[in-house]
Length: 152
Image (cartoon, rainbow, N blue to C red; front, side, top):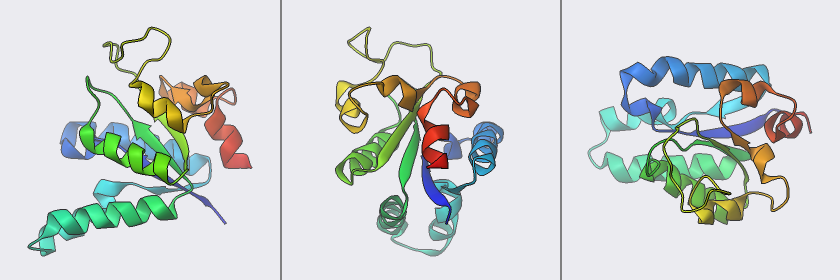
């Protein structure tokens, strides 16, 4: 049975980033992961329902619960607040967490840790860097935790 990956991202808000989003999805498909991409999975809700915001949030929550891990794109200063909430839920659910940031802007008060320190609650204390990616090539690399995790 394929492992399920929830792809938390802000890329669905822009037509320009759809190509990049597809690159992520293709990498995960190559790793034989089932990708839950929230914008794609909930687009029918916005078009049909009057109270769509609650339905959309509940749908994303149910998907997070079904998934084995979350891969969160955390670009921005600060990163997208929806992605941060999804990460908080994933931490509370004790999901495996992977973070991606290729944004060169400083987003932390620490030079040692590149993001809000609370996010590190969801990463292993030792070797957390294996769960943090700064390029698409990093994701594909056997040196990082996602490839190892996908093969377990």
